[in-house]
Length: 226
Ligand SMILES: O=C(CO)[C@H](O)[C@H](O)COP(=O)(O)O
Image (cartoon, rainbow, N blue to C red; front, side):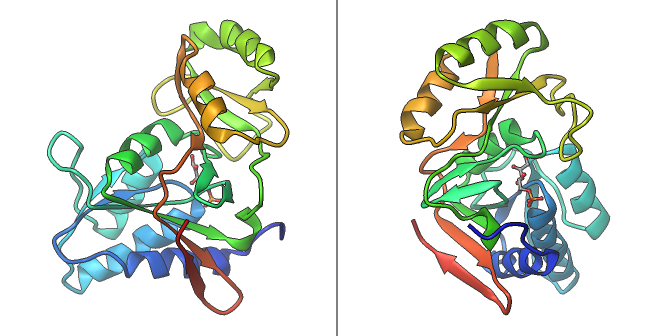
């Protein structure tokens, strides 16, 4: 796995995915620096006449969409035809997300979309998922969930102010436990176990949700279909 993708690679991935959006579509707007490139590209396309509406996955993506002029709607009023979102790790069609602590709303919007395009630089690609899994928990559930995670073989760590890639408190007013499990051989099983824990809002394992992975490279973008 190549480490530390450049912003240019992220830009190429985001802009390539934005080109897949058709006139009249409702678009899920992902969170993070790579998805932000897609949102900016969509803003330019709207300026040129593309008629779309966006469903943001976070305060951050909502603010950016408003800044660049993408009209917004909600899941109450529309179902996304397509969503474009980033990821922290990608192994085939499975993902770890939540570096920005937005994975709860990201999963809601991404799963509602007919088609999910993931945008990433090459450093995110791996054979097996192994990054810590972000788990959003109700504030009162922090210790009980941490205990359950240890029982599942994980090592939970409360995301704190030392970590600059996400808020301490989520957009939903909850906390995040980053749970290290080492190499994850059965993502679907772990996803089900984490979802079953009382007090867990959502976790960052996205299993079989992605329809295409747009990977930014040194000189363009490639598209992989899991
Ligand atoms: O899951 C996410 C936020 O919750 C992001 O999509 C993920 O962290 C990737 O971010 P970036 O594109 O900045 O590397």
